[in-house]
Amino acid sequence: MALARKLANSFVDGDIVVLKGELGSGKTTFVRALAVARGVHESQVNSPSYTFVNEYGGRPPIYHIDLYRLGDVSELTEIGWDDYTSRDGIVFVEWGERAGPRLPDRYYLAEFSIIDEEQRQIDLSLVQP
Image 1 (cartoon, helix red, strand yellow):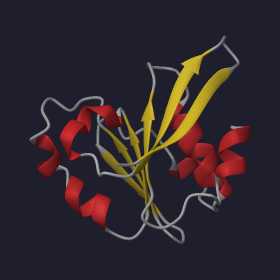
Image 2 (cartoon, one colour):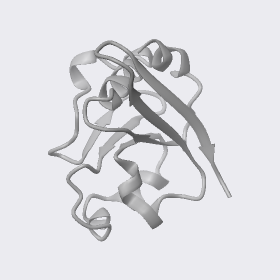
Image 3 (cartoon, rainbow, N blue to C red):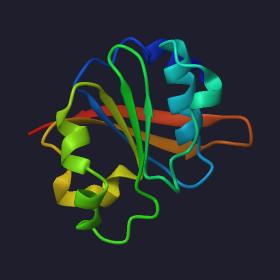
């Protein structure tokens, strides 16, 4: 949560952040802490596992996508993938590696690892051609 708060203002309009890690590794907690640091009320930020996408207000807005239940890359069209990844805002994508060839050429990759019950390791990198 501390890292998310520190990074909150580092992401800008148009950034896409792919969150990769096993269940319970802190992906949703990271997005929640970052969104709260940007002025979104904590109660608004929940895992979009069953809705695929949650939208949070702010400047720029935050779009929180969860592809855990994605059956096939073709389903991205149904959830509005191209619209979300091209509109104004910051996009956080849990299980984003499931988008495969539909990921943009440039995005941030945050890889989450569980150290113990209370600690996580997060490696953040920029992926670009």
